Amino acid sequence: MDNSFAQRRRRDLILAAVLTCLAALAPVFIKDVYVQNILILTLMYAALSQAWNILGGYCGQISLGHALYFGLGAYTTALLFTKFGVLPWFGMLTGGLISALIALALGYPTFRLKGHYFVIATIVIAEIAYLLFLNWDWAGAALGIDIPVRSDSWATFQFTRSKLPYFYFALALCCAVWLVTFWLENSKWGFWWRAVKDNPEAAESLGVVVFNSKMGAAAVSAFFTAVGGAFYAQFVSYIDPESVMSFHFSLLMALPAVLGGIGTLWGPVLGAAILIPVTELTRSFIGGSGRGVDLIVYGSLIVLIALARPEGVLGLFSRRRKGGAR
Amino acid sequence: MSPLLETKAVWQRFGGLVANSDVSIAVEPGEIVGLIGPNGAGKSTLFNLIAGVRPPTQGSIIFNGEDVTRLPAAERCRRGIARTFQVVKSFETMSVIDNVIVGALVRTTVMREARRKAHEVLEFCGLDARAEVPASDLIPSEKRRLEVARALATEPKLLLLDEVLTGLTAKEAEKGVELVRRVRTAGVTVLMVEHVMEIVMPLVDRAIVLDLGKVLVEGKPADIVRDPKVISAYLGDRHAVGA
Image 1 (cartoon, rainbow over the protein chains, first blue to last red):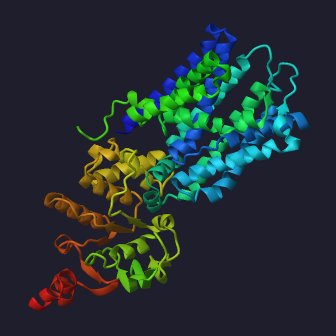
Image 2 (cartoon, helix red, strand yellow):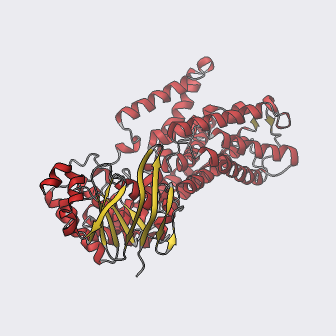
């Protein structure tokens, strides 16, 4: 029995290695910049959704305010770089740490809320932060921050001639968050989180400190979300509150996990691989005034999945039958 | 020998309702004690106070020589109090073995060790064949056993069982009784709430009868079942007179 578990873990690792290699080779065949752009966004959202999944999927604390951490990562990096000349790599780390600390500070009051009330609180808090940044002159207010483009370099993490460095960074980030999740899944924290999600009262009776587990999940999740935000700031080299802190991002982080399979290792990757290309394509084909059509498309996808496979697309690959009929 | 568990003049009020009034009980190490009483007697309230769901309105709870009155449930689990739930609370999306691993992780953070321990406990409870099945696939009697397994994985000194034998078929209940005996043999003290007397009386060393929030009588099962006060509490005064 222990063997079947070890085998499953090994299979996951091998699959991840194979997929990473395939993804790494993709740019060799895909020269089209537009398609490369979609690939980068897909990888980024896979990483972000994987980070969201730690809190929302494993620990069951559904956050629709992760745009806050994404924005904090983006703003920290951009501000440190433009105001103090601090390299984005440090900005990324700083943004991650600030976000983790803020997640802890916000978790302290909000983790006492249950279910829908918690979700509403996350939305409201992110919206408040959005409004604050919209009016914060030093941080560019509504005009945002233009990140000055110098020369192509890994030090400043800026590349104008080719998108490939961004691609590989997004891939590396995606792998990193996946590996962290993989490791956490089979750790005390992973088990505690799932127990908290399924039944907090029973978890508490088995020695799980429910509140601390939620705090831990929030910090890890916020950290990686902010790193993703920092990456995004460098990638688009212009940020404003609308483009990094709007509710839209909170949804885009949650939906791939929900679509692919919430609280699973592969759900966010699979969900992002389906959702992001579909979004980008509908956006460019319907385009222009069609702002929001992409939302309609994946809204419909989610409804379909919720009706047919509540456990996510991954459920299609699972041989396990629910209900114990056998 | 000092008792493993002691409640000293414990009161629990819910607004105007007094669920436990001045309850003082003691459980000696190695005992199987039954906490019985008719519906609404305050058994579950007392049980929850001991498990640490909430602190009592008044009074104190001593476990293993330590005052645990104000400790939260998770901390009590660490000290060696484990419980099951009357309405089973399995972690439904997790496999049976993973359910038990959660319990085992109180004593170790080494996953390999927790997994080994969980298999051991599942075997002890006769559930090892179902280890990889999702908990949601278990039949009710198996879920009851999973509750016990999960609790045992925390290596408790005191196991609190909340109506684990109620609602089982005669055959399942028999297996349950046998499991509880083996738990005691393994060195765990057991305090069990039941309201079906026929099941618990042959099993327990001592029974404490609660009625209307107070300790009515306590003693050997054979004496308890003949006690007119108990009969009247369960069946009404008419029967007590008849007896």
